[in-house]
Length: 153
Image 1 (tube, rainbow, N blue to C red):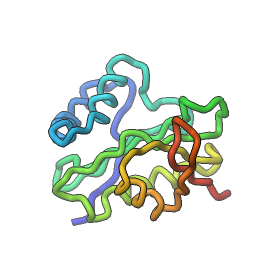
Image 2: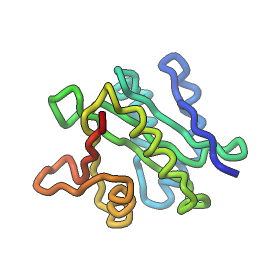
Image 3: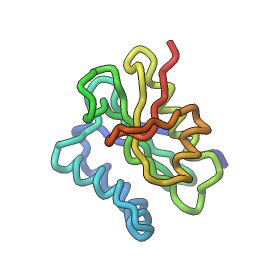
């Protein structure tokens, strides 16, 4: 069964963030804190993915959240038309089944007319290969960015 994508959060529905608890627990057990940061920043109000062009998407399979990915205006860049892929995580039980690709491609499809470029940072060689397969090119000598994707008009 192919996962369904949907927007996760609306600024007035903080309780929806709790739906990520199980996925965040799994990520934490594997040494990843990106979902803890997503939840913390949301609760503190420092990142609600609510500016123009921003969103958080979830992948749902059999009524369970199996993946999450966010899109922000890049906080490390002063240009307003630069987006950033944030907090991508896919449940271990569904990895290598297209969930991550589905999420990132959905993020990429939201960019035309809003962003000229998408940026991200990863220190994982597997993630690097994944992003390169999706059209991101590696960049060097940028402390806050390891990969860039140019948005087609």
